Image 1: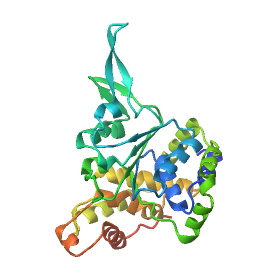
Image 2: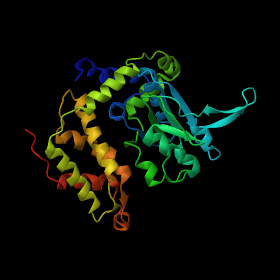
Image 3: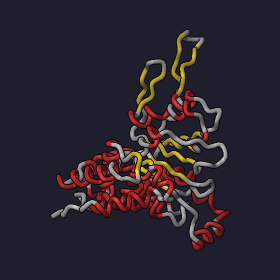
Image 4: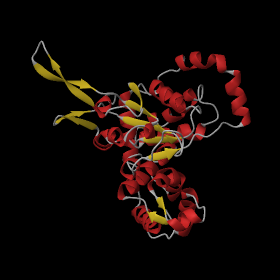
Length: 315
């Protein structure tokens, strides 16, 4: 492991805290997902800082950043790019779409049509786009941060399960506490200057190295069995119509490794997995009719499952 990089996430977090007040846990979770090489869903009401967080990340991590507002009239070609005829060369040329960057912010993803939403499926899974049969690789590293308004808000529609499953974690920023909101109001005139003053803490090569180091974290064999037991318990629960997919199990493992990395260890323990379980699992499960009738939430059920499955003893 490259120990010289392990302090970097804390430096990045401290830099982002200049513009995101009182949300240290959210910043840390997003950084873990990036170390794990995954995509992030931010689900919340407008105005709580989701876009500001994405922009701050792009600045502190030296990421080429693009943002697309997903409105009902957005087209798949806006995302992936399209072929355009060049009169001078008499050939069709590929014109890049919004995803040709390191950090793509899909703003209000659940406001656009399913056809446009589906344009992100290959992007998020394969790291490439295919236009007219020709595949174009995306820059590396590549992350999607998507925001969505709570279901039921005007003009929203539910994302399909296949798309939600491609997000490594789902987070809710929530309202700031009273003290943090007072600081936000006090700094209202400084917001733009604070954003412009953010410094790049990491390079793209350092991000890639950090991702590699995290992927090499030692995982005891008993932890693979533990993850399998957690997934099985969810799939057989009377409170869930569908449980976490195998892709979700891989996401749990990768997030567990990332949590161990930022904790300063080179091995994973059960507590690493439990620390990230809710953010990895809750958007991947579907409540049963019985759970809906009882007013249960995904968070409650996942927490119960983790309490029911015995943790292995790591020596």
